[in-house]
Image 1 (cartoon, rainbow, N blue to C red):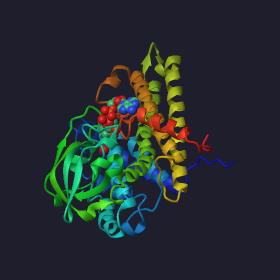
Image 2 (image 1 turned 135 degrees about the vertical axis):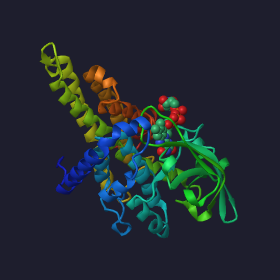
Image 3 (image 1 turned 90 degrees about the vertical axis):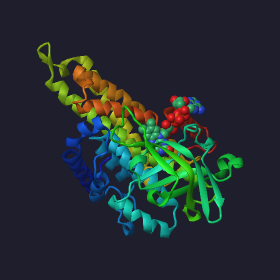
Image 4 (image 1 turned 135 degrees about the horizontal axis):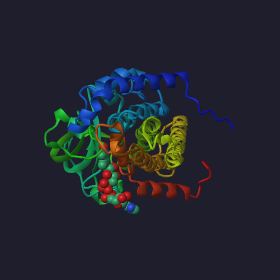
Length: 396
Ligand SMILES: Cc1cc2nc3c(=O)[nH]c(=O)nc-3n(C[C@H](O)[C@H](O)[C@H](O)COP(=O)(O)OP(=O)(O)OC[C@H]3O[C@@H](n4cnc5c(N)ncnc54)[C@H](O)[C@@H]3O)c2cc1C
């Protein structure tokens, strides 16, 4: 058995450059931007210059040709400063553009991906609807074919980046009577269509990451904007969700790491009863638990990413080991993120309750990861389903 938990020199360099950028460029803006709930201007141009936008894309599109380990590492590192903006970058580059890349034609990729890499375009992905959340297959958005166009009617809710996006990938029913077997995947350029409205949703956490209610009213998209095959949307959706769950684990991991680092520093500096609070065993217990939780979650996420990178199609879905591993990575990290965030606030006492301290943002953002990309309850159902598969034999 060969176990090697060290990052390569190239991966360390990626981590160092992203962390340097996040602390120099992002950090100074975060308190104000969080208060006004605005995404920093030029965020995607900055991440484009850093080489993060097209991290898994082929070099011919301007990408870095790297894997999901590097994507996870980049998202973890951004999240050491901002969990919310790491999610925003992930929603554009992994949920939207990487999903598009896996399913579009070569001609479509050559047109779209270079704009995603430079940051000229921001993307969003629409699965969730007001009446179809965990039960995504019950979506009501319809796409009706009329000549060489599809006419789209319906709505999508909680769409990350919706208010700022130039490009959207979404799912709609092309054969409503066929249930899940009648769903297809579409894309459109926002400024090339009529009949779509993006309304910003107010949130108490993940501020700076813009979220929208998207309404389609007789929106027309060209028939060639259907990708992944007619009525094959479920396969597109479920295979993409695995890489999303693995790489977005980085958002919560980066937040967890900062909670631990900031708490450690604060506990050594803060003096009560004539001693640093770090000398009290109940504080030490929290720090030790935070460390164990972060390290365990890190192993789950990076081992899932490493496994994914070994697969030829780098894709999961029902009946695959990747489905179980991806759900486990985000389940554990989502719940651990909330626990670690709570412990960090407790260590900071009253100061942790004030927005001036970065720890308050780290805490507020963490709760999302028990909800977004499929809730904890749904992830447990996926893990159990895959464990109970007749041919399940590996991975323990
Ligand atoms: C900030 C934010 C960003 C998001 N970004 C996106 C995005 O970019 N694109 C997108 O498409 N969606 C996005 N989402 C939506 C997210 O994926 C959904 O909120 C999530 O899937 C849950 O759906 P719901 O909110 O409708 O909850 P519901 O499905 O209504 O669930 C409510 C509760 O019931 C539980 N529940 C439901 N069914 C079961 C069951 N069978 N067994 C046990 N418990 C169950 C759930 O676990 C949950 O606790 C985002 C959400 C948020 C808050």
